[in-house]
Length: 253
Image 1 (cartoon, helix red, strand yellow):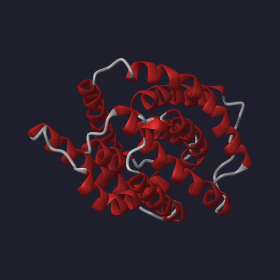
Image 2: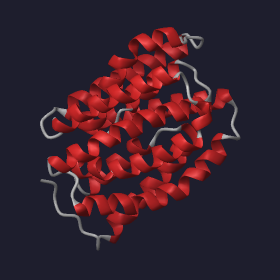
Image 3: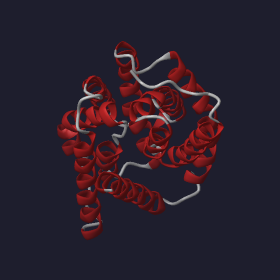
């Protein structure tokens, strides 16, 4: 069972609010980024299990909103369906194993995947994953990403790396990644409730955390619409680099 949450801890709640604002700006601009900022902060203030559970409702609401906003920029329907379905299955598996899987090992594996991809892009900037190849790999990639999301609360190293390699336009990228995240949240919620991870207090904290997140999303969207595709691609790579370095630092210190 997760520890009790104190709603009188002003410093803890303020730290969560700041994390959600920064995560909201990044998500508004790129379509991803909330967990990598928010999960470590919430885990430091409360607990890893609490962090993963707190993020479920904000993830669901923010991604459903972005699906609606970018609904006219959907990629191939079959591709999105597979991404969402297998991601949801993986999230269910990961949530069940949340208390047992060696998260340190998984984090280092994620960091290795991201670093390998970044090196590939730097050494061969024209590298691109075609839709035909992506369609063949989507089931395995989304399943793995879902397992990581359910187990450690962060699936971006797999999902963002995969979709970024497809060189999707920003609106298409945001719609597609939002389908993936929302599908996982739909499975995480009942599974976490069943295992006592998502309690009423944690759900309330998640809903409150959505307020600063929602306020920051338009700011990020405004920023994202005013940068070139090249800058957007560089921003994604920078995001992935920071993610990999943080994972390595946390696990080796």
